[in-house]
Image 1 (cartoon, one colour):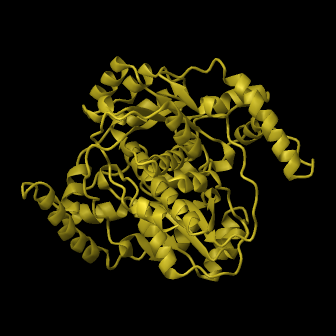
Image 2 (image 1 turned 120 degrees about the vertical axis):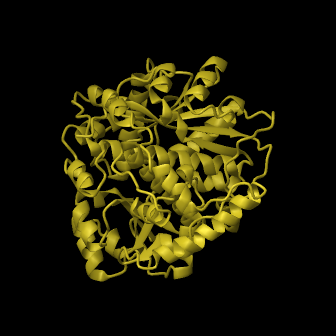
Image 3 (image 1 turned 90 degrees about the horizontal axis):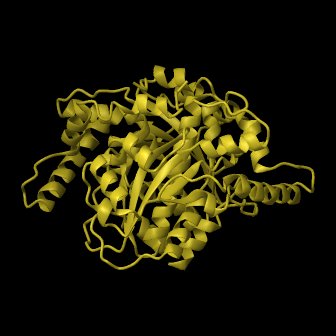
Length: 245
Length: 245
């Protein structure tokens, strides 16, 4: 299935969409494909909320760094890690759900990500373009209120879907030698490989911005990690029933 | 691309593999496809460690609920969330990496899951079968020691890959109506939908076990969540530099 490998490798985020319609059936198809991903002990901890209401979309976009593709994409989905439904199931089976464990946070979050990535492949396989919106975690409380999320549900990320109105280049990835290791974590060549990649990314940034952006992967990482990003997440999650015990 | 939707929907875990070889090039191809998944602000926080050593595999299998597919699969990969490499990059750019934030834990864990799911699709597209091994989190300290993982790296899950020597049925998923919601989290029909699904799963279990297993999804969830699963995860992560601040 060579075309599947091609499809996976052609991925790039699409932030500009044409007016062409995406049908409700298409969205349902995409979500059904998402559900077919592996799920830890069959917990199926993913809930997807489709937001169409203009005001809701506007408020979510404002909460998420004003990313205009949230209001402009034909389809905007919020992917939630959901232990509320598991709680319902436990009640129905006359059991008590223990909540707040770190392990539950990991397994539900991973569940959502596996499902969403299946959705992305399904959508791209239909010729659609997508863009994940991690920035809904900039203000997850606003998103939680708009979507009326019950306790034990948290919004992991958004996903814009639509027909692409742009055709950006794919972004170079780290050398596979850096990513794929044998037997143990050996990093003695890693600085050298990162330095090579920094060169690649510098060329990429310059080409993409008409030489205006001069940066490297290392510099971007240092810029990103020198300050506390989204420091509210711990308390937000704790309030939502993910105490990380 | 109808065949991509077919591929996604035919997914089931494969736990029994033929002796047919998977080449090193195949594995590299799979990991390169994995890298093409979206990554939060290009952090590329995934490291994959291939374990071939018989003793290491045996120890990992013992730590992971004795799942025999770990030692029997032609390929066994451990997928790690890696902030150590980002730390190296920060040093190279003369920056100081802030670590231990809950948000970093989320973004790196999501990064790994998105990449791994791409790997799964790539492998299945080549006719291979896979099985995620979340049970490496049963004893993540042992896995960490065998793989000599540095601080700020944690093993999220394992993945077995090989040519299938079995052809199990796909496992029924929750009704899409339960998963895909409109505008807000409305659960007033959820008990009814879960009850329907419990019926479906009871039929599935009975058929698969020659009527020996009588259970439902709700019962399985209650069984799973009535006790503290992997309560060591918080302290393990804290010791590895994921303090969840």
